[in-house]
Length: 348
Image (cartoon, rainbow, N blue to C red; front, side, top):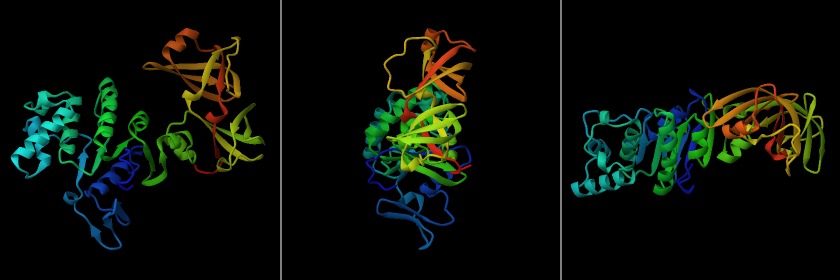
């Protein structure tokens, strides 16, 4: 991805061992690919055919390692300054003051890493990566070492800093929430290969095959068969139920096609059985039963049986208001555009 993409953060996403961090190290020049080309803007950093390899120090890259790699014997300001190399003292002081102010580290300049919290250490490591004013910022699992509340807080801060700094950024994560919160563009990795790339919204809502659907965490994936297509809508037989989904040439919505239906839990709306149906544009209204409820912080993941297994995600407060219990009868509402179709046999 070249520098002309408006500095939109790109996420390399996939399971552990899929090649994300290796790709990042190749971009940084810390590893050499066996073959191929790496280009940033108009510059070729690596080309196996022409035997070109630009060393790391000439790529002007900021790199935030997963474990932060701070020097324990250096104070915060000294750790940050380490990324500057040999520059005039006045400029060095100006840059350190600028980046510590931005990342709210000014009051911590004289502390050692062991005197910092995990979130503070992360900000120091980020400051060291940014103080050299890189053209490209690489972040390897930047929030993975933090606890839940700190991670959530810094996720919001990191997005703000990336937008404000306007530096081309590529970050690695296997966390779905981080990918959605931090990235504009996403590349899906599996077993060292790129399975799909595009905007975060596009890839998460319309995975190209079954492998990608599983990687991005689609909650409900079931086999179905197209029985009818009319006016841009496909009727899908899923077990004993019929669902209405959007049909298009890209998702093979033709009668007789065998498909997988993909539904994200957050796209399932629940209402109590027997309640007066609200005004809704949802074309799918399924009667089912609650099988289990699993608390996930402020949310509750609900497993339903509606003729096929279905997952829903609601707030804890909504769950309390509906007084949901295992075995309760419930109605699930799903919009046609919330059901994505993948042709059967497109992937394992």
